[in-house]
Structure formats: structure tokens, C-alpha cells
Length: 131
Image (cartoon, rainbow, N blue to C red; front, side, top):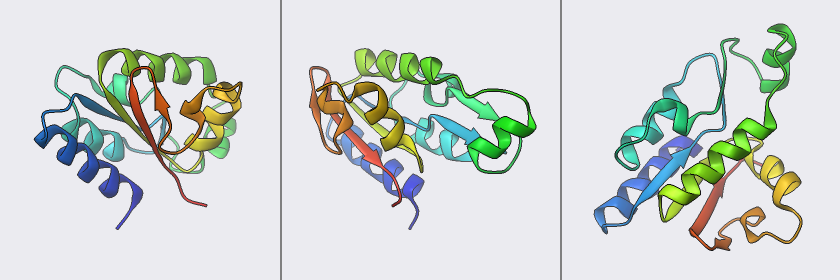
């Protein structure tokens, strides 16, 4: 079972318990199916752009897609999207191969959001990544 399926399952369990939650797929490459799955499983009132901040059309690793499309990955946009989700829901589940590194890089100044399962003021953050 893949990261997206696990994230969607966690979101459905949270929603079933009455918890406000959202999934986030910071970067999609090729299609947006993963983000669409997280959107469907997460909170109401969100859009695909709330769940997926950066969409590269090239079906390749983000760095390759970014280079091919001459479109730098806007880390600030991703972080702003993450922070917006944190304000709107109790729990955010972030899924992606590099999500942990991206958030650690920015929130590594002592913010617990950098830790898998870290507790923040707005709730739990679960990061689903692959090694």
C-alpha cells in the first residue's frame, strides 16, 4: 500500500471521529491524482490548490520536472499553503517523498512540525515519506 493510500485512510479515520483534517501533497508531477485522493478523503471546503501547492506537468521527479519546465519550485508557496491548512483544520497529513526534508528545512528552528507526529499549536502533523 502506498503513501497516498495510507494518508487517505488516516484522513478518513480522522473525519469519521469528527476531527477537522486535511491532506497535503506539496508537489505533484504529471497528474494530480494523489492530491485529488487526499482532497476527497480530507476536510470539506478545500480546493485542489489548497492540497497541492506546486503542480509540475512533467511526470518525473520534482527536480527534473522543475528543470525541464524552467519552473523553480516555490518553497515559500508550499510553506504558506501548509500554514494555511494548519489554521483551517486540527490535523494535517503531508504526503510526499521529500515533504519531511522540505518542512524540516523551514521549520527546523525548533518547530515540532518538523518531526513526524509532531504536535503544533493547531494539532498533530503526520508526515508520510519514503526513506
